[in-house]
Length: 326
Image (cartoon, rainbow, N blue to C red):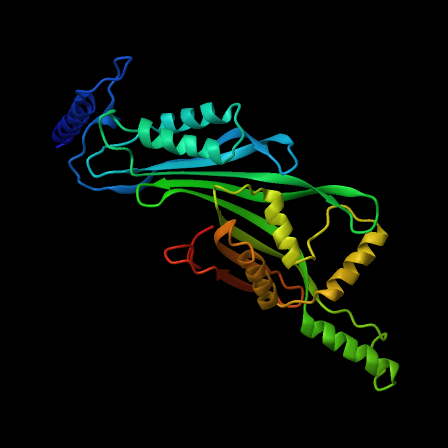
């Protein structure tokens, strides 16, 4: 029985080795190239590629300054039903070559998309790859002036740049950013002021006569589709969000700034529903630049152990929807 088991194992091992070695295609160095073998499965894959490829990228900000950022890239192409695989290393080498000295702007992204679709073909006489995709994630610093004092600090924004090119829709460019802000509950503010008034009038002796409304650090993640023919920077997205929700968290504050922040919050009490509608109005007022958008908001409650949340989107036909994954 043992001899038979060993014989079966040896036979299986030999078959695997034979299968692995049976490759009619070789690369330039003479090694077997299974990736270029045709596939008989007839199964297409919408996206295949690489996640978490790290590299420095050059980004130009709105004010003409150039900075290098430590980025994490995800890059994919579509695989048709006749192909066995794609050259993963080619995805990386193209991105590295194009990002080495060129800033990651629309022109560079278009070049990368074109090279992915052309150079990941097995043969130059084949049709272009149907779809190509690139996402770059990094933290983007912006100088933020203090509200009242002559100080400033760095506000860091988690940013994603996405480029997509398909036969059907052409080149598309997306910018995703997380924005943190403070939200004071209007209901809580009203009850606090009602209590202070009743205490001052002698209708109650409970407490100290000071009512503190609950407010919380809140955040939203906005994904916007940018018109590639228009100049648009991270700073522009920050400005639009700050116009909608002025109570952005602060980087560096003195007592003067802290008081100003309290006054600012008192002037802009908001439920998550209010914040959602504010962003809606701000983005839709800039339709020549922002072609489509999707926003997910969360108020991280200081009163409750749960959070208030909302999702809203522009509603373009065939565009971003609430089930889009950030």
